[in-house]
Amino acid sequence: MRKAFTYLVLLFFHLSVAAADEQWQLVGEARLKVLFWSVYDSSLFSEDGRYTEGQRPLRLEIQYLRDIEASDLLQNTESEWEGLPGIPAASSEWLQELALIWPDVKKNDVLAFEVDNEGAGEFFLNDEPLGGVDDSDFSAYFLDIWLSPETSRPKLRQALIGEG
Image (spheres, helix red, strand yellow):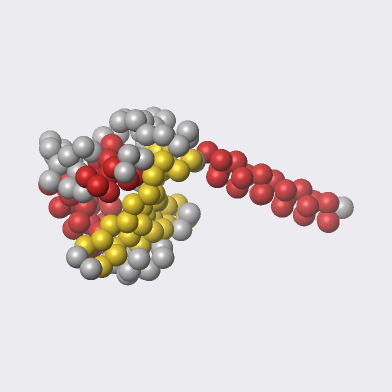
């Protein structure tokens, strides 16, 4: 009986993982390089493997190729937001919330951001939940760092959305 129960638990776990993996189809991938240094590899996923502006749900994964402190992640996020049009007044509050969520990342860590159908987002580090920012505008503005036509890295955007 115990062996049968163990088998059922393993089967359920396998089916759950398989179902979760099937939700996401790769849209595109890109590597961020600054001067001579590779910083991260990024991947964008959707349910059908295609991207259209404002589409949900989405998953953005960033695999870091070097150690980066959380304070540097926050500083870079703030800098990218300042370069986008119409920075929301709430962005300073969002940064404070992110400071409580984001850890330092190590080489090969994967920081992911998933946005559901309603626009709510959650962060994961190596597939472990970290939390999210409870503001309906946050998810779109966070993804704009990579996906906005006004991003500071248009070639990276093109590759992520499958056009490059």
